[in-house]
Length: 106
Image 1 (spheres, rainbow, N blue to C red):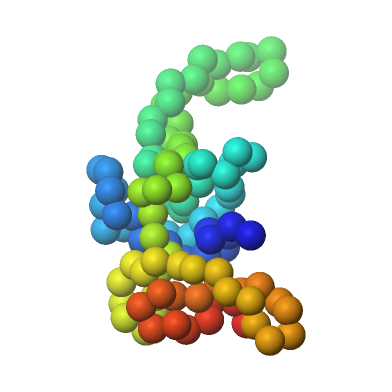
Image 2: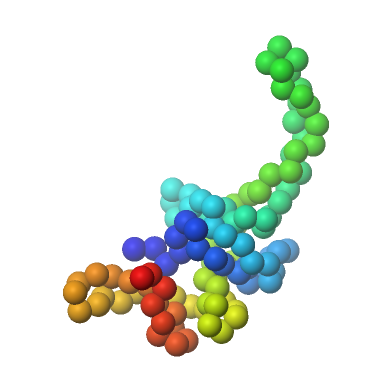
């Protein structure tokens, strides 16, 4: 079970976008990198192709960042928080915030 999942509200803790909140759009296959909405936006120069109807120019894209540079956002405290995994009495595994033991997955 991953500590960060698609759709989670996260905050960036390191890098050029430090302090920015966003939603996880995608996790890469190896689990080391995540794509966060509005974070690490780069400009890519694309060459046009008139045969396919593709126009050239400068396109802004979001690139993935390392998973160690984000923390799950805790709405109770208003800042990023560490996440742990515990097993409930019925045998289901859930994520919880380590600062206040509040369950993330309901």
